[in-house]
Image (cartoon, rainbow, N blue to C red; front, side, top):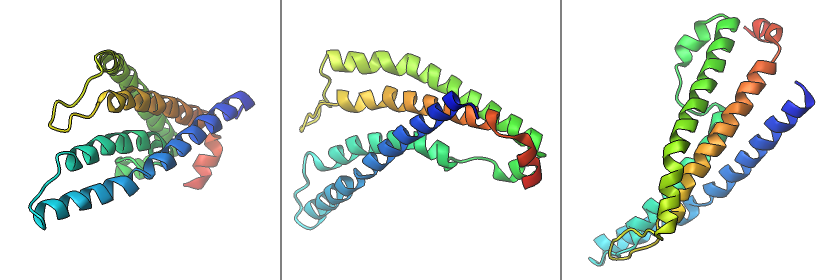
Length: 172
């Protein structure tokens, strides 16, 4: 792998791993908030106005910002049964095509999500609930996550492209 490509692949994967580890900590907030809400609602008959909404607002970034590193780990849903039965050259071609589809998806989603996030920030959008927290920071995680996913997909594409096909053929 050429050094510049190797540097890019390692750098974006490192950024996404750090983001993955950071957002994993959100579970330490989401679970106690939901537990408090459940106890408050069902034991004391006094639900909070903020519990479920806070858990929902935190789960979005948790889910979205963990995705790019999951792509690197191969943790997304795929058709392994079909993939394993293909010859190495076909698997490589399919993997490259998959990354191109992900990149195209990210470009399209970013095109539509970025203006909505900017608009939410300009209007200082809130949830309009009884608690009424700001939602614009959460909306900004969508274009951020899509950008990170696209960059990771480019890294995976380059990693697959630079991988030695002879080694892949011997591995099967």
